[in-house]
Amino acid sequence: MDYHFDSVLVANRGEIAARILRSVKAAGLRALLVTHPIDGQTPAMDLADDVRMLEGATPVAAFLDGDQIIAAAKAMGAGAIHPGYGFLSENAGFSRAVEAAAIVWVGPKPETIDLMGDKISARRFVEERGFPVAPSVIEEDDPDNFAANARAVGAPLLIKPSAGGGGKGMRIVRDLATLEEEIATARSEGERYFGDGRLFIERYVENPRHIEVQVLGDGQGGAIHLFERECSLQRRFQKIVEEAPSPALDEVERQNICEAAAGIARACDYRGAGTVEFIYGGGEFFFLEMNTRLQVEHPVTEMITGIDLVEQQLAIASGAPLPVAQDALTRSGHAIEARIYAEDPANGFSPTTGPVLRLAPPEGARFDAGLLEGERVHSAFDPMIAKLIVHAADRPAALAAMDAALAKLILLGLTTNIGYLRRLLADPDVAAGRMHTGLIAEKADLAAEPPPDAETSEALAALVALLIPDVGTGLEAVPAMQAAMGRWRN
Image (cartoon, rainbow, N blue to C red; front, side):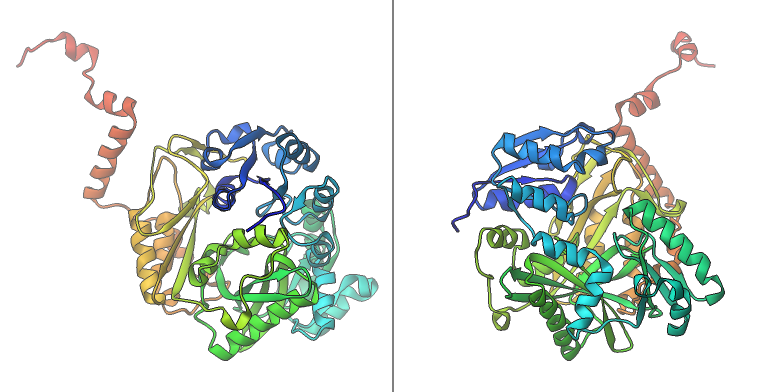
């Protein structure tokens, strides 16, 4: 492959930075990275050929400083910038600035980011082209009668901000008497998180499944899908476990939803890797949104298709055609991804911090991590610290492989959700594939950590003594008063 650039700067951090850099180096390109001092030494830094430090009022602000990132890219001679996910990955202004600096943007066209990044414009675009959307009302169409028009749709309703994502500003309304109050709250959150208080309201599908489709587009009207992913295991609209394929769909439904996603990508001349998300219930599916970037859960698609999505992003950004015709694309087996969070499920899933005293990934599983043994997890960023991915012949085998991998994963020094993930995936409804986006909330009892048995407690105490010298020394030390007594015995 002859690329139009010889180096790629990853404008991100954590596990996704390391994952992208591996594909950059595999392509024979120079691997460049920006980072922040708070991260210390990371897997991404070990992979990079050149690293530049960012400054900012906060670590997050540093990664949102597009001018500083572009200046670093120029200083390192970067030919392209890959934004990863989060931060500036869906910022059309940043992508335009990158291209204005004569640097290749590894992502969709800025106008596509604008179109699909605004949920209202995206919804209109999709609906006008005949793809399924849920019944809804848009505030700016008739501001004076927004609430009245929403009532006509009927409860339950879902209020959404036009901008942003991650579940912020979204409100479920089952009692229409609270509609005005919830609208005001959603507007306030939209303004606070995204600087945009515009809203729309759509019919809420009770107990829906969240199914998304991976697409690749060449930016010239050509697009293919790489099948679907099931992302229904969520907490407060944040995904926890993803898998491919979805256990909910038969082959006809799979073809319909995947072709709809590919059709949307073709309609907007999509370039690169993207994801079209749908809600699914009662045999119907409705367009939810399009994410114009690489998704956190992209590894499960890579596992079932054998296609490196970052490699394809780099190739398409350099003008290469799509890697395969749709009818030649096949999938194999079943893949599951579990997100490893630094959080305490038994304490309301509150974020945790601390040193990584011991880290040992399990054999036979893919482990995408953004931390090293000896480094410290802090609260400056999102609490997701790693992803564990397994692939097997079918779903039962994949569930068994994931449980075994989670059991063998060693990550000591801070509280994580590893035990919770095992309990969640062993739940009878999850094991049977009976999932929906509210299932985790219904099974709140799974968050409680069962007390360890005596044997496990003793083993953990011994391990801590070995890993932390001060603890071991303290256990073996003889207090001064007793030491002064010498070998005297009563």
